[in-house]
Length: 227
Image (cartoon, rainbow, N blue to C red; front, side):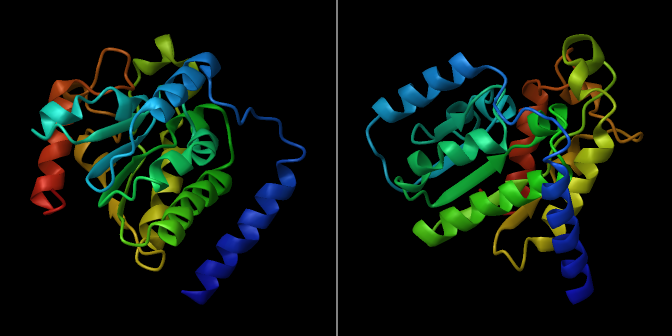
């Protein structure tokens, strides 16, 4: 275990150093939309407790209040967001001291060619900040979902990058206990035999979930007694 941690730390340090040479965009894709959503969040009254869904479009596009039959659910998904964007707006989540926080983030980082170790470190930082300022919050970090071949038409930057998602997910799973969050392997439930996003759960764009995908997600959470 100690050797594995050391190797990861070395890789992280190396990756950050290399980041000075490798160019990638850390800014969320839809910047105007991001600002619009953040302004909306900041205008809403502070409701403490309950459940918050935090992440990118995969989080945002779920009709969570209907899916969970709970009008108190707070959706903090922003389409095209990445881990850097979540870190920038995390105080809006922390101040609400949710009972449960569900996190689904990372696919846009991968599309932007942000190194795996930086993605993982950002997610760990999200967890640590919530744990420090809202220690009563139970945190559920979801695996990054795979895409399927249809993604190359609408989101070509995400095509053929399921390998990077696997690497991030492995680190999340390995470190969940020590970092005191629950890892939810949604990837394992929604992928097909070839490891790609199963078309029966996917929108035609090969990246987003359809209604069946969201319902399967909720079923997984209920099966694990998370909901």
